[in-house]
Image 1 (cartoon, helix red, strand yellow):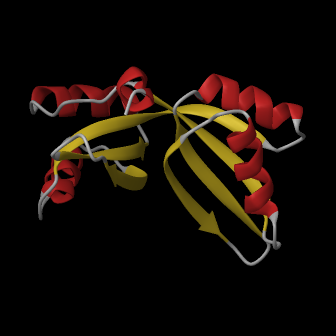
Image 2 (cartoon, rainbow, N blue to C red):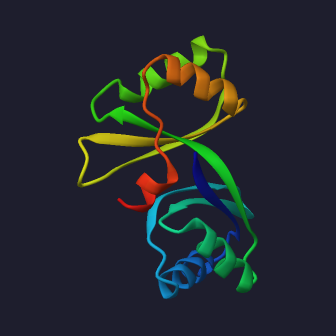
Image 3 (cartoon, rainbow, N blue to C red):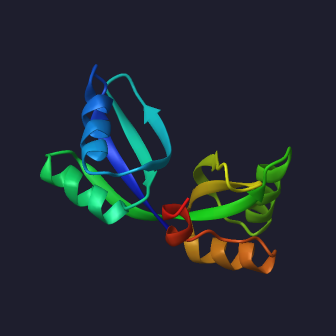
Length: 142
């Protein structure tokens, strides 16, 4: 499991600057991010090197933030890598609620972040397919 921060942002100029400045000042390194937005607000989802510290610092600065667990999966960094994971989960009747990915300089693999409707089932299905799950320590040390 990987810890993910979900930050509520009003859709106004400078909101992302505030969050990233707080994290920068605290020495927090962003590993991956995605933004889901509407006309009025967005949800910034972040994977960082120190999620506990980031969560605490953002709360101390009156930022609306939640910390939850998501799956991290290692995939081949080639065409079809994500499809293979999606197919395994679909065959195991696990629904993917959202997904985003990132690559690193030190790996030939990509990492996919998944939020699924049934985490325990997803872990079992992926594990039985020899898919390697990525843990927080690995992501923190990239």
